[in-house]
Image 1 (cartoon, rainbow, N blue to C red):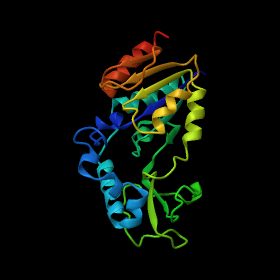
Image 2: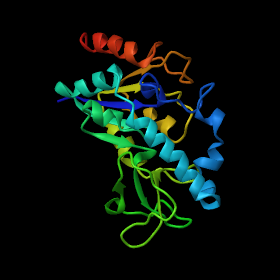
Image 3: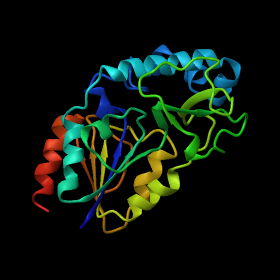
Image 4: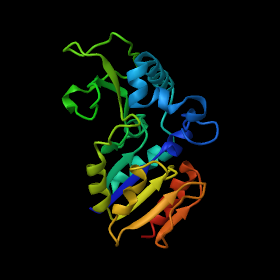
Length: 234
């Protein structure tokens, strides 16, 4: 079975009503990411950071996957699919995708804090809290304060190696709803095999200069319909 690696960003979930981060009017226009989403911000004011992600979970609880999520999940009928997402929501899983790599963590999960070396954690310590609130004083079974299971600014991206491997093995690389401006995730398409076909779905200009990349200039939901029609011709 041939393989597709799907790289997704905030543009996929925007049509479900979840705010993007970097666009005009996005979350980073309303909240300073260095305050609510950085390692330093966590050390300075963990209560504020917990409240920010409590708010994100509350919003996610009222949000449903859209047709782009569903169409990506449906690819698994005929392809071996790995979804690599920068998003911290669970909409790909709720749409039915079975193999999802979350580069930047998952908002519905928490883990014990580890001081200044937050990348040093075990997956066995990660706790799924769903859409519940997590507050200062909420601790792990070993008595350690719980923090969001999020890759903060200033921390490494522990799943980059697995993501790069999935891209390198793919026959098709599909990029949906990401501006390709956030590194190291923005570099992932460069791991594609020279024989792989690469498609980008995004209504805006994307900073990629490569003649063999096909740009579908559309939003995620309708762009996926176009991609599926092209896929039927391959």
